[in-house]
Image 1: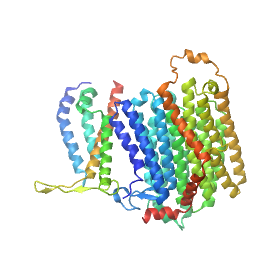
Image 2: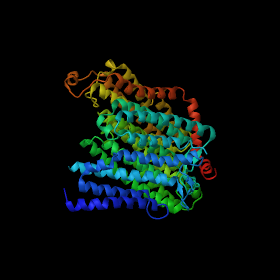
Image 3: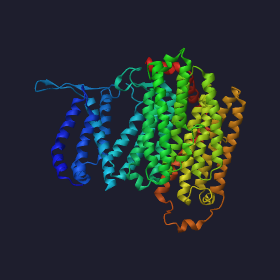
Image 4: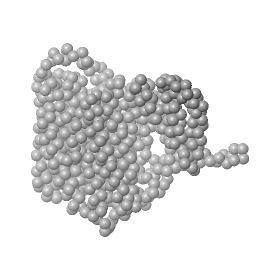
Length: 138
Length: 502
């Protein structure tokens, strides 16, 4: 299926969706959002791209096999736990640093790393499933 | 901070994620799997050592205190189960080197296998009821994919039965979890057990316990909820069947033992009598089903059901000796059953069939395989001096002590029938001549086992056979650990104190 309207719209919406997904991701710590929702929005961007331009182009755009992405995601999520272990706390205990950047104190901690893992797993998993379904019909 | 409880849990998931990253390199994935399983075996041995010297180990991930956070608890029973899982994970991953086909490997067999082991170990270590549900789901999802990988019609047929009945069981499980939360206000095993001590609400607790009995009963394939097992277990490749047959049902049994020794002990006269009368038909129906089958995989699948009956029977007697016997039985059964499935897989590779009418001549051509089969089969049938004898002897001895003569009678008769089934396989596959040797020569798909593949297939089976022999002949020190584990199960206050008052 080739639709000029969809393709043109996708070119505009695709980067917006990606930015929005990152916004959702960082918003997640104290407000609704986070790795899971951000990941779904991010996956939606690529799914839209796949519908408009086909899965082959989308795979090239993604550069990494979605299944491998799931692996990296799991590894990141585990890493956040290992950091707590190395710090001498129980597994998954939050570890925080508070660097001051441009006069603002930032709260950076292991939950962020865990959420990056979740984000990657969600994007990878969703895309692996949807690509497989798309390619089955063709 | 002692993290040893978590290592057996973290190693498989770490292995799975690394294997996923190496998704396009099958050779690398295989070796990642073997190394990961070997590390798991080491970690689980250390865990058992630590638990047997320092007592129950508890970790609160995320540092949330016990009744609120999720506890990961390793008492002796859990540690023993984790150790045998580690051993099994290791030998099966070596066996898979010689058995797994390219197609399944390219669809991610290795990461899935590791995640399945992750789920099993999680179920053994968790100290939280809802968390247990999550581990069951981890196992269910991965095992569903492992069953269906390969896409044959019979496989999908088996997988659908498997997944529907197991989802149903999860539903009942979840309802039970809801009721328990309503009664006690917590889902932590220890806190629940404490809240239920001296409860006046016995009726409601017993009702909830029956929901758990059905939920775990389906998972562990007890009568009359076993029918999905023989319908689905013979369809996937033998490596997968061996993992499922030996391990997954035992997680159900483990959960039953945990729930009915720690939490549901208010009305033992009622609940454990029901367990007893479930155990008898489970034993009998399983063994009769096996007697009527001629496919080795189906015979072994039905025997899983029958053996589960013995374990439930031991749990129902609920004495120290009986519980030690149950634990020994579970360990013995995991080893012997795995080995029988793996041997059946080798026989299939050597003469191209699982069916007794087409097998034959292995005693003459392959004495090594015959002796490995004989060790496992004699152990399963319960002849001295191997593990099966001690397992049955302990459970039945416990029955004699509580004077359940009828049940004991059934258990002994079923033992005899088990021997019959094993003899049937022995006669059909080993002693009788190969029916049509020319069929193999003309079959283009048939490839004789050779070189490296042979080593990958035989070494794991030989390792387990050795463990069976050693545990059978030098069982004495091992039984000391089992009695200690049974004491921990019979006295919930040890568990409760370890978790709530560290």
